[in-house]
Every structure is written in C-alpha cells, then in structure tokens.
Image 1 (cartoon, one colour):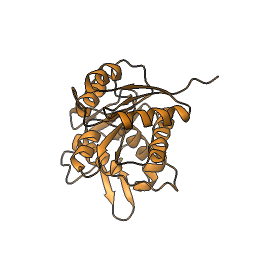
Image 2 (spheres, one colour; image 1 turned 30 degrees about the vertical axis):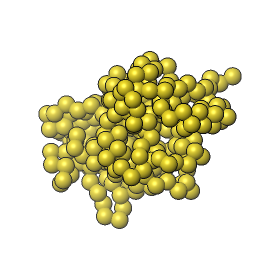
Image 3 (spheres, rainbow, N blue to C red; image 1 turned 90 degrees about the horizontal axis):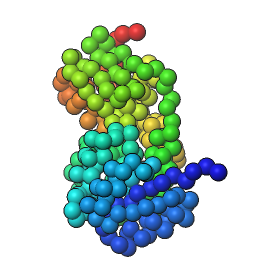
Length: 235
C-alpha cells in the first residue's frame, strides 16, 4: 500500500484549523496540526512532513519566521502559505522567503486541495537529467545542489526556483508563458481558474538573484506577448 502524504497545518484559528484537518483527512492525507507559532516552528523543522500549510498571522512565531527557518534547514520542503487577501505584502514576502505557493483568505477549500495536490505532485518530479546548466561563460547552475554562480557571485535557490529554471532551460529555444509555467511547474490543470501572482513574484525574485541589473535582465528575459525566456549563449 502506498504511503499517505503527510501534511502539517499551522493555523491558530480553531474553526479554520479543524475544517482543514477534516477536509484533508477526507481526501486521504495523514494530517497533523499546530495551534501556534511555537508548536508550528518545532513541528515544521522536524522533517516529518511532505508539505506544510502555514498561516502568516500566528502567535509566538509568525509564518514568515517559520518559512525562513524551514528554508534555512531544507530548501526542498514544500510550503504553502495562507495570507490575508488584501495584503500583497504578505504574498510577496512569503514567496520571497521560499514558499512554493500561497492561498489568499478567504479561500476556496476545493482550490486549496487542488494546490496541495499540485505542489506534492511536482515535488515528486525531476524532469531534467542534466546536473549543470550552463547559460554563459559567467553563469552556471548546479541543479543537484540548488546553487549557481553568476558573474563571480555564488547563489542558492529554492526547489521551486530551480524547477522554474530547469523548465525554462529545457525550452530555451522559445518563450514560455505564465500559464504554461503554472501548468508544468506548479502542476495546475490547464482548465483550473487560478488567480495568482506566484509566477511573477518568483521571476522577480530570480532576477534579483541572477541578474547584474534586475531591471534590465540579460539571462531571464520577458518576450512581449510570449512569456519568459532563459537566454543561453553557451553549449
């Protein structure tokens, strides 16, 4: 029998927490929970979970602190953050700290389930066999160690950032649309109506890491009306 995926739900609001636990147990997951930031921090760092659902506003440690601690310890751990719907800063900060995706409150439980399924499905996929992606004589990416070297600067990536770079490298001969990235990298069905800025925020974060001048990118460019393209001048 296949092992159930194990989820950790870190949420201090009892009604939301109980509802989410019931929903994910119904969908066949092994579910644990934490009721505040202190318990959430301890459990999140235990390495016992396939995915962490993490609320931003928590007593003790907030969701940002927990997400940052998770990423410091494990850049592969899938994390979905629950954010305030009207607060773009929550979304940007959470994704910048390494969350794989976010869901804005109030949210559709059905859509959260679909996003959890997509993140877990993508976490099991490794589509590219190449360990080293060479973009130029001054830019190289190590996919196994989630690291890179750009213009003599050493960089570390999250697993989601590496997924994006790998997919763009695989299709480097053409621009890749935002919708294609959501489908292929995040794992969302093409007919799923997703309102999310996660692609744009991840691309902006990658540019801040990789580009000598993020406002005038030379590696990760935008093709008007086409999408994003990874520029490769070697190999």
